[in-house]
Image (cartoon, rainbow, N blue to C red; front, side, top):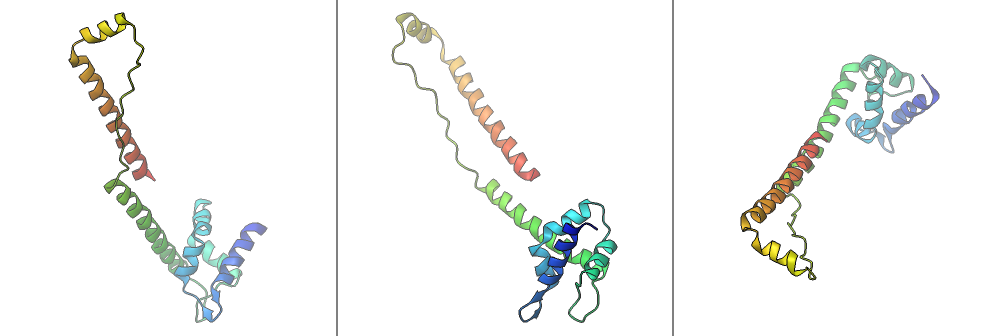
Length: 152
């Protein structure tokens, strides 16, 4: 075990001791959830993590060492709690999306007579389809943003 990891584990073990005694394991895990994510991502088993914590002095209030199952369930609760907070934030953003306004480009005021007559001679349907395609593009962009938020 490298020195930096040992120091983080030791810091976690010390964080279990509050000014008036032991603090709840879930609260300590919530404060240092990234440590457990990093350990699991590196391939460590819950048994290995529990033994490493025991080696740094982490104990239950009764003085016994943390079991792998107790540690796994406590971390799982905090991960679930963290994911609920993230998903509720995303749901709120989906329920109340930011309002976007469609704005048409301003018409240049100094058009030549030839350009103006060409614009006037066009029938309105192509202009309407252009506006509809702009609306469709905005809707597609909003759906893509929503999809990205769901992936987070």
